[in-house]
Image (cartoon, rainbow, N blue to C red; front, side, top):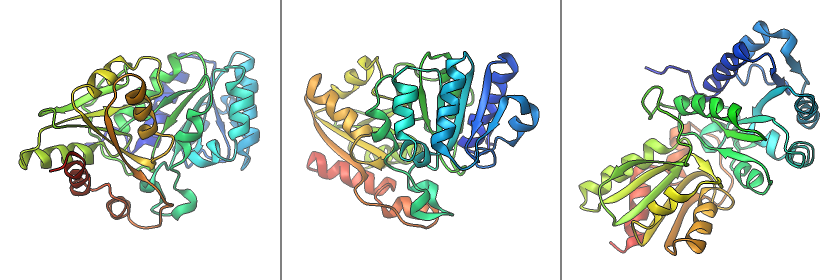
Length: 312
C-alpha cells in the first residue's frame, strides 16, 4: 500500500513536516498549490505561503528574495515551467548567489503527460539544471524516495532541484529506505555481462529487464542513480568498472541527463562502452504505461537493447 499518493504528495508531505519544525520553511506557488497537492500547506500555514499566480519567473525571484532574507523557501510546479520558462531566474538570482531555494519539478518525462499531452511532459529539465553551477540534482525513483529526497534537500546549503512525476508512480523502495547520499543503490547483482543504470520513475522497469535477462542467461548488475552530477561519484565509478558495457535508462532526453553524466564519468574515470536509452523526440498523449512502452521503456525493450549492445 502506498504511503503517499504519488511523488507530488510525498514532496509536500515532507515540506509540511519540515515546516512544523522550522518556522523559516515557506512554500512559493506559481498557481501550483493544487498541482503540487499543497493546499494543506496553504491552509495550515497561510502566512508562510506565497501565491504568485501564473508567473514562474516572478515566483523564482520571490523565492530568491526570501532565501536572501534567511527563509527556507520551497517552490514547486511543472518541471518545464521552472527549468525552461524561469531558467534565467534559476540561474542568475538563485544559482549565482548560491541561495537556499529548493525546487520540485513535476510531470517529468512521458509518464507525466497522460492528461495534458506533450505541452506538459518535460524531458529537458535535467539537461537545463545540469548546466547551472551550484545546483544539486535529485532524481528519486518513487514516492517514498521523493519524500526522503525532500528531507535531504533541506539539509543542503544551496539550491536543490528535485524531479517528480504526475502522481501515478508506484513504490519500489521499502518504506523509510534511506536516501543514498553517494548517488547509487544496487538492486540486482546477477553478474557482469553488463551494467544497467536507471534514474527516476522507471526503476521498476529496469529491474524487470534485469530479471528478464537473467532468465535468458545474461547476468547483469542493475542500479538506481538518484543524484546526478553529484560531488561523490566514487561508488558509481566502482559500479561502472564491473563490466565493459554500460546501458543507461532514463525518461528524459538522451542528452544532458543520466546518459550524459555516465558518459562523462566513463570518459574521465572508467573508459567503457555506454549505450543510452532515452528520448530523441518529443512525446505524445496517451496512458502513461502505453506511452512509456511506445518510447522504448518496456522491460522487454530495455532487455533487447542490452542484448544488442553486448552482441548476444
